Amino acid sequence: MEFTVNLTTEQIIDFIQQIPPEEKIAVLTTLAEQAHAEHTEQIQYGEAKVRKICTARGLDWDAMTEEERIDFIDNLVHEDRECAQNYL
Picture 1 (cartoon, one colour):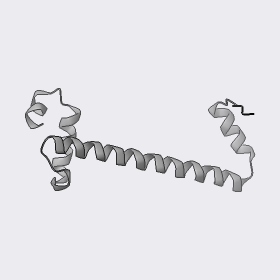
Picture 2 (spheres, rainbow, N blue to C red):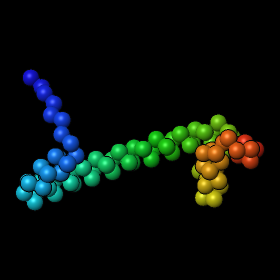
Picture 3 (tube, rainbow, N blue to C red):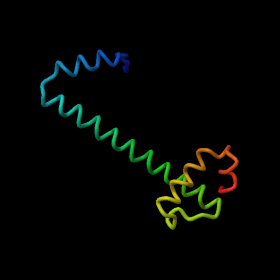
Picture 4 (cartoon, rainbow, N blue to C red):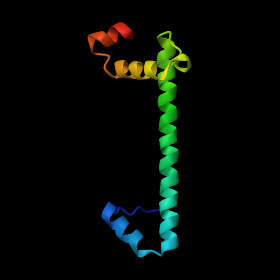
């Protein structure tokens, strides 16, 4: 038998504040590791998408300078601008 308990963020914080310091560290470490892993996955997903868009537009992300990358992303985000459409 499985059941779910719904707690508010405040209730979770109150609970964590009641546990021993070693367990708090374990909880925080686990949460930080999971957040880092999720962030890394998001970065990798974003990079893959940008590389695919570059390739589709005849560009090489790896050959671009940092400034070219920034300009490309800025123009990509603002594709609806007339000047961006000329670049992309």
